[in-house]
Image 1 (cartoon, one colour):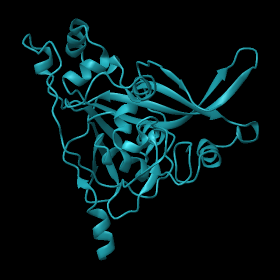
Image 2 (cartoon, rainbow, N blue to C red):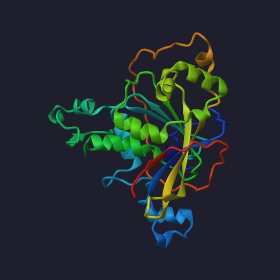
Image 3 (cartoon, rainbow, N blue to C red):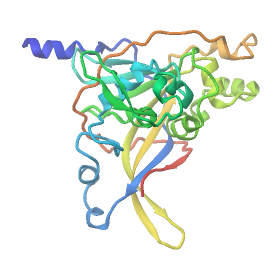
Length: 305
């Protein structure tokens, strides 16, 4: 094995936790855009290759914005802690941890640079990665980082995301985050074990408050698919979609949630440092194989049409 290969393999941590065995449930269908008639009859992976930009699984709003760029923004602003785990000393990612520390509001974003105090959408120079030159970004890029970074896929297309809110996060969160990110990537209560569901129903908390208060993680993965959608009197159209699945993490100790002495209000806030490693530069398309589901809760979130 050459030294370059060893260095690349060491960028990621070995698998340290067993995978969950709960069933994935379809929790959101994100409609990307309408598939044009001339490619409708082609295989799904061919359609994806003809529609999506090379190496990306999202439609970029500006050039030269890859997954590594978006991860760097979230790390630099101490919004998210990333950890990547591999299996059997290989570079194939088994799962990725995504610990949410904070979501900056427009006002907090402006506070990062006194020259843009009146407009978060003014561009500013920011160094978001070590040993890299400053880049020109604004608050829209920060929002796009949240929207796009989870659409990373490695060559196996079998990895998953472990997501959780760290108790340091400040609530309430920005409206765009709630109506966009949480609607798209948040879990469904259908993944809860019965005892946790009972505790949730008695808590009088929103789902996000409940997940935050007890730092409950959820496991997420996604895949490409197609869906026919009827638009009023315009007829039926076929959309390329990203179907998002979530499930319960079986190793989570839920005893302190269900016992009578569980805390009735969110815990105190504190600060946590940010940890990160980099994504691989090359992002490939997933294998569009459906996950089976016995209970489906659809939350539609339209993209470009």
